[in-house]
Length: 133
Image 1: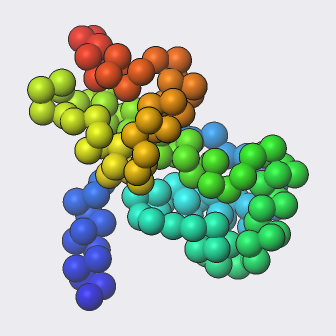
Image 2 (image 1 turned 180 degrees about the horizontal axis):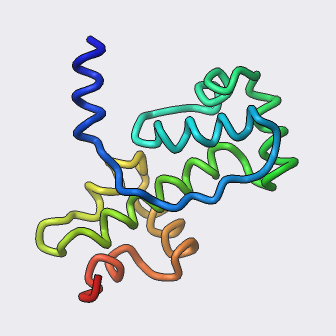
């Protein structure tokens, strides 16, 4: 089974994306690194906390205190940047925004588009259609 998971992970390669990590305790850094490495999976705050070796409440408090955000908001930013990287690299006729967004865990496409525009100042379709890459 581990070989199969490794093969799936190898084909779910992600582009290098600059993610700004927040300062804080070592467990918070571990949580952030784990989220970056596992952003393509369905994960919860509890999963992140377990990976960091702390409980969910401590994880939430660390993110709130040191980053003024939540663990899931940080994960959403990772995923938004991954979607953007795919759209920048993609081509309009073959790249389907909805498929890319769903592939990164965005189930509600309206909310995804809103988060995307708020983060990048443009619609996902504008990113995909931009001729100069």
